[in-house]
Length: 307
Length: 310
Image (tube, rainbow over all chains, first blue to last red; front, side, top):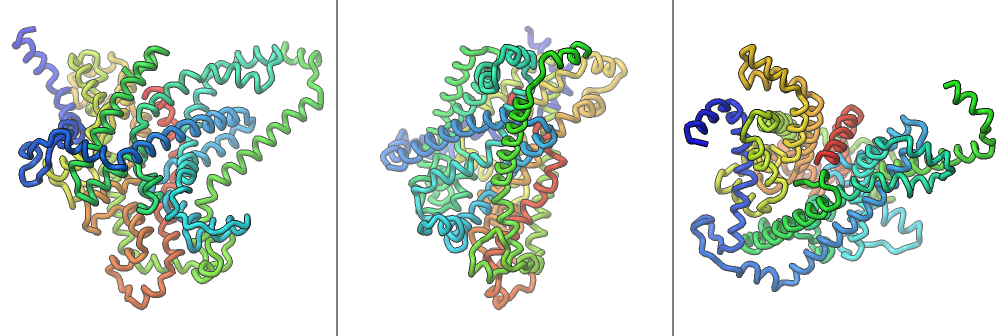
């Protein structure tokens, strides 16, 4: 292709190229510049000298990061939380979708689904209020009503690290299970009814139909959804870990994840080196995970792979 | 039809079996009714607390049974309405401006990608795709918006960073636009319409379903955002509603101290803090809950295309 034909093409499509311009500019600013900005992790950042003028620090930022206990804690917390979120949400969402599909009165099924989906729309701030109504040390529903009813001592929730893995898991399930059930219900409704009729005639009961027809047929979508989440296992829902814990410092042992760590190191300590090192660690591992997951998806079913 | 009717007497369903099926249905309804109630319980609790008398909370704690009904919390917030209305105003402006601007930018970007005669469509699709796979993380992103272009302490800080465009949404729009017949676009070209005109008068009106769905997600993201306020803004007159709510939960004095109304220190001492907090939550979540029945269809649509196409 000669240069003149390239310019001819350029002229021919100039309106379409103009349409792309605002989006390209935005993505350059919002996504691509920060990607190049990861070099900060290897720099001794000095605001007055700017990103490019600051001196190179080699791997010193990473040495600092990994010599602290924090690196281990935040990595462990991030992976364990996200792993349990994925498993619990998957099991519950599929179960709910199957049961919703069994309900005969359609408008009631839709009503249940709407109610279960509602928390998905709440911001992390709203969720933190709802949780606070239960966990407030002085007046909370748990300390004032439920624990006395069970004859248990009150708990200082926002200062007690060991309860948070349970609380955050419950909150995440409450907020996220509706989304999963919507997706799986759509998949189940789309299945061919003939399979079920044939199975019914052959005398298969509900459980048999569930294990032998429904589950195998929705397995591809389960795999895709799960693998996509596994690819993002290093990224946490910042709002859940920051707002719902009310940013309490005494429970960080069980509530600090990579995202909240990076935020605190940057905004509260102003430690750009350490926070960018942790951020880069997260981005690289996340990227490798996405590539791996996509490779596995391609092996299983090519048309479902991302690329 | 006749066959089915004829088959019935041949295979009579025993009364017992029929009953079993309806028991199963009843059990399902009980399960889901209880489940839905459990999901709504936190919201109910907060609503009821907000209507309870403050002193009865000091005595009994938060309770599902309002021992003494009171609207004191809402009257207190009404005295302080300037702060709340202002925050509402900021959030509404940011949401409307952000969602419209985002939708236009994304649709403008997605349209050339859907045109089969556009030679660079793969390259530009890939340009979006990379942003889904890889990000630089919070630190360089923050530095771009504070040093490369400084939008700290401005309303742009609530609109631009992070929320304006979404890679998945662009790709979903592209797929939808690809479904529009190229013959339609060709005939418009022959009639002398330019690209922008075709996009605006043919493609966009035909794409209302996908625009509604993506616009809804965009709207929700802006409405629910507190993060941009938290990291880019310290001037309280630019706080979004969500961020004012966050500040109020962490420190109830925040509302009173930022009010430019006639709240004096003597009033402050009698602030019904616990109920005001919860009333604030209701004021924040109210619009979402009220709009939910109308939005739900698009929401479910969006979640399912996102899962299948994403």
